[in-house]
Image (cartoon, rainbow, N blue to C red; front, side, top):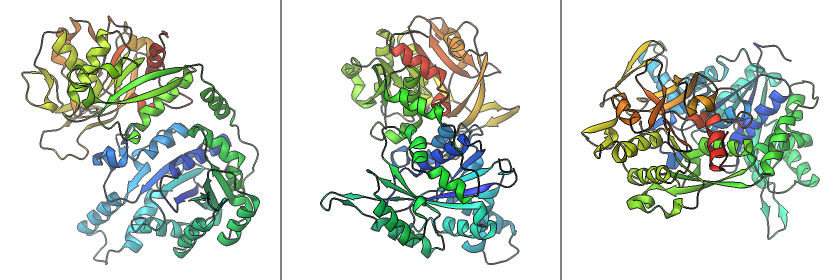
Length: 543
Ligand code: GLN
């Protein structure tokens, strides 16, 4: 064990093309270092100018991952948390936008005493402060640099990590670079040139990679490894093949087999005894040998972009592994279900309506709820999916045909309404319709108290839970008696009893809506109980 207050910094960059799996590779290295007994912290440096990913379209950017402390972050932080089990924090994701707004705020305050404010040193100093802040308790801090080397936006980040190497020394920093080694079918061979060019680009910025992760769809022959090592100034053992795998959870053990963690530890002069990866191996064996399949229909708006539902898909996968089955996710466009076109729901074993925003697709989501309720099909409503369930039941069971959410227009029966104030750890938070779009939601971890005689209480096995939120609207507590009268139990409430957190139908095999996002906390080694129970219900079992 290396001593705390002396963390090592590992920087993971990417070259050639994007989408090579840099986030998963970094998360897997984090998991491997933990398997060697080290404490890790993972961070993401995003080069775009948005201040945070909260207002970015899920079509373009995938899911917004929310931390316990209420930060809206890049979806890679979800991978980090799932792979290492370490809860991500606000300080683990920085964007160029955030760095610049802080530098400009300081300039306006006069903090720079009239100096000319420049990328070097002012912006790079701010980046270095971010990288090194609050890291005393960790053995390793892994920082992934978003984007691809050569992008204009990532230059200040690369310059900052170059400076850190200089300041902290080789013994406390490591540069790992992920590149592509393509196989060219017509030539019948793999090509190392893109890797050479990418490393050249890094060298031009003053960064000599210490380890190369070469993404390749086949094993890299000795000769090619030798060539890469020679042209890129690194040891042959530091050329690591990052091979394609069947599931992302195979990546830690595959990278270990290729020697990634060994090479990293060797670089830092640490012992290279074998890591304890038995739990990863057992998980993968289970995942690759399912005893059957269960089909879950997911009714959403962004169904064409699976990245928009990254944590949800992972949580369902974890629950499948826990139930020894493969989960087939059937992504259904809510708009196609409108006017009762529910045939596509007839072949699924369970229905899930995930989080969402805005009017489009809501009629189809309400049809999906009604179909699940009337046909006794397991239903799981998450955030917007809970709100849709409440509207459906208010309209069709509670005799409130005009029931609606104020998010979708004016209504005489606001069963879901804009939340204007709520309690957060003893203080009152307030919002109004006119507040800025960015960061105006109820975000992060809040406690929820479970009713003793409820399915939710039985599933969690606890009286009180903490889950993460990201929403503006809330089920209206004034309708509690009316809705409970028709069998919709309010089984989870905020500690002050004012905010409904969980609703469930008592006269149904499995019908639960939650105002929070349980998918954000599910992990392969600790699947979320609600998802595990939902998949079990889809299989016709009860847990
Ligand atoms: N649009 C809804 C709200 O703001 C639900 C949000 C969500 O599903 N994340 O309350």
